[in-house]
Image 1 (cartoon, one colour):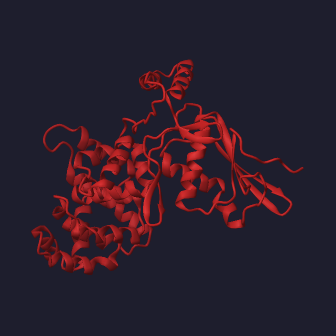
Image 2 (image 1 turned 180 degrees about the vertical axis):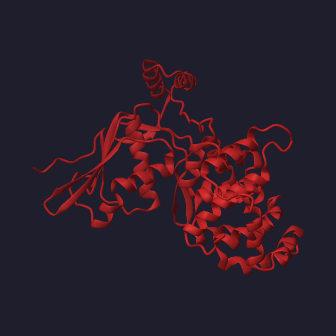
Image 3 (image 1 turned 60 degrees about the vertical axis):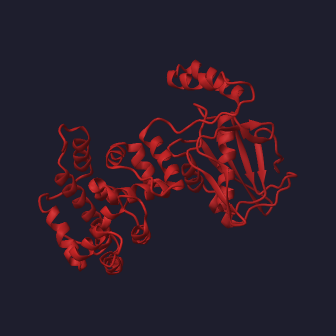
Length: 382
C-alpha cells in the first residue's frame, strides 16, 4: 500500500541527500530537535509537496545506520540518540526514513560547530552549546518554556544534577533563548579548548592538561573520533612530550595525517614550538619515515630557533633518531595500555616536584607505540 507522505510536527521531508557538510549538519539538527521534542522522522526522497521522487543508490548508502551514527557523533560527542533507519519502496522509488525517538533525558546539546561552505565563506548551522527543539513544523532554538518542561521531567526522574542546571535557565525571562555550555568534564573542557585553538592556534594544552585528559575515557574517545580534537592534542603533545607516545599509540593515525601535522610545525608561532624539534624528528622517523630527511634539513637550517638546529644536528639520519628511541625503550620488555595509564596516573597523583617517573612513562608509552608501528607495517621494528 502506498504511504501518505507530508510534513507535520513529527515529520520532515527532504528531496535528496548529497552527503555534504550542510546536508549532514541539517540531518543532525533535525534529529536533535525531534529528540528534544518527543521524537519524529525525516523522510528522504520526498519533496515539499509530499510527492515521492526517491533516492539513488549512493544516497541510500550514505544514510545507512552506521553513517547516520557517525554524523551524530561528529556533532554530539558521546551523547546518543535512539535512531533507526527504514527503507520504503514505492513503485521504482526508494524512500529512506530516519526516525528518532524521544530522548530519555533531554535536552541534547550540540558539542561542536555545524559548519558548511557557502560561496567560499564558512557559515554555521549551529554552535557548541546550542539547544534545538520543534515548533510547529520546524526546528528552532529552545526557550525558557522548553527548559521548564524538561525540568519537570527531570524532577519526576529524580535527577538532581539536571534539576539544578535547568532551574537556572527555566527561571529566565520569557522568550529568552538559552545556550548551554560544554559540560564540566574533561571531555567538555577539551571541547572548549578546541574552540579556543580554532580561533587562535597558539592556545595549546599544557602538560598537566594533557595528563588529566589522558586518564579520562570519555576524553580519550573524543580524541579518537574527532579530527579537530586530535590535532589539538597532538600539536600540544609535541611541545609537552610526556604523553606524546601514549597519544600516538591511542590515535594510531595514518602516515599522511602525521605528515600533515608535522609540516606545519616549523612555521608555528606559539612560544613552546621550539621545544618540539626532537619530537618532530622522532615522530617522523617512526610514523612517516619518508618525511624525515626533509624535516631534518628544515630544522637544521632554521634561522629562528636554536632548539630546531640542535635537533637537526643531533639527528643527522633517521637511524640516529631510531637508535635514541630504542635506548629509551631498553628498560621495559612490554607495555600494556593499563601499564601506561598507571604510569600517567602516578605522574598526576604522585608527591613531590617529580611526582611520577617521567622516564618510566616515556619508556612504557614508547614501547606501546613501537608495537603499534610494527603491527601496522610502518617500517619501525625494535
